[in-house]
Length: 209
Image 1 (cartoon, rainbow, N blue to C red):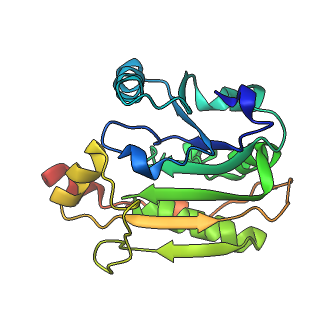
Image 2 (image 1 turned 90 degrees about the horizontal axis):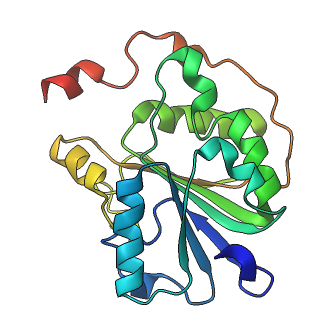
């Protein structure tokens, strides 16, 4: 799907073309690539895209660690990260999809004017991403801790994944962050003191519910 990126700007979106995304929201002038390792999710999205004749939608079944080999430099216009594993254990912080390790990868793929979007129920990864933005002095267009409670959610942000619906039923707020890398390509690792806390994401409360 991205082979035509020389004429149609590529749009890389983990959540694009999921079953409940109305096709009117997908611009015909962009390509949408959904990435996941789970085959069932690929099948559901691919079937919906085929049924709706969405010719600018494609899917890659791969581990996210391999994306650097799958896209050319400056090929991607925008990245959406929706409800990723927050990787709460400190030793797994490098696996967070907004960690410095991944930002360096995104920096090569993203166009200079590209954006990264994070939508999550995890207050820990939301706060962590905010600290990453602050630490590197990146441009942050939106940092909203409760998109539904504040009324911030627009038509696009109001599209709910199955996970999101479940989290809302648990009474958890949904957060949204939109930021840019500002042409930066190097992101030296740093430790975040909040990772030393034993309680990070209301784990006990989640288990009770």
